[in-house]
Length: 488
Image 1 (tube, rainbow, N blue to C red):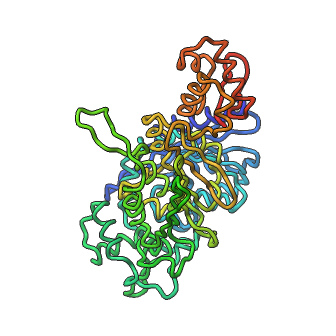
Image 2 (cartoon, rainbow, N blue to C red):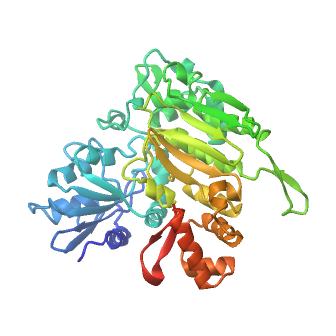
Image 3 (cartoon, rainbow, N blue to C red):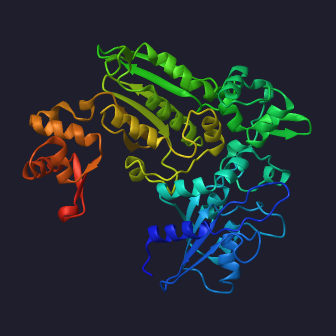
């Protein structure tokens, strides 16, 4: 079989559905897991959880049961679930990530992360730290895997972490540790109350049950009878996070059309910042009248849902090891720009983000989980669905991702022509401008679709697209009738 990543992913998902759950007295759901191994000679082998023996992981079955003592150096592994990290299994068993490294496999494709926030992405990081290239399954297949494992995911999110999980040796970040000279009284009551309310948590803030929840989420650590916040706990709920972490918070700037500007620093608990940003901007962004309903309503031309998603993503997914840079929000007449320190988390690429097809993966799962519980972030995505959908609903150009070291920059356009400079507009005919405005809401098109959408003949459509290409507004993908044109 010629190496075809998509087909090998699909094969892993197919065998995943054959997984045999082991009976458990505690009612704990077993994940459905499938694995595919591609070999240099073109042959493939598959395995699923419990295939040969009850409880055996799919990777163990594939590598140790079916390919024991075989040379696997140049093979490629596809697994629908993140391989478990060191200490994830009881001694003397070793984690699947360790087993993969020992086989000297150098490339692994992963369907979904382990959903437990205490271990999320630890297996992936272990592989990467040992020279293994990790890629993620396509988004649509990730959705299938998560849907099939909904019960397992739900239980994993609620499950208490035992002592072995608390003492894991693989870390994603130093922010999993406690912060010197910070204790639980330094957490904001307002921030904790907001989390409790929006996440619909029954336990009262400060109760042993509530503190245990934070302990399980990696936001507190307990030594003897004393609870201390971790770095992530301070970022989320600290009264003054910047006093110990200068990179925390968000800098806001509004540039008004008359040349004046207004600034505001958001330095409180991270969970409070999105609401504070909305309050700050609510009476400053120009409004328009919505006549789509019987009763007229005043609405923002750019839905705040998009701004919130952009701000939350910047705060949650940024690289907090970059201490010299802060998240920034910049508002102008035509755009809203959000800057977040740190490149996209490998294996996610800038191109995948711009195509709104990036796989689901979080740099800081402890932060992401809290915002997801508060319904302020997509559960396992990067806000891409919301950003694309809302822009298209409002007929706005699709948001744009760019990189300017050390910032990943997301630009939201506040009106249709915002993505086109005045100099370029002067070079385009009216029909071309109409076509360009339509194209920016789609991101990519074929000449026939373009012609149909703006009601021109195919020759005119190709002339428009060629002109856009000459101006370096778009580039061609493929050749012949199947050629697609993508906004740069």
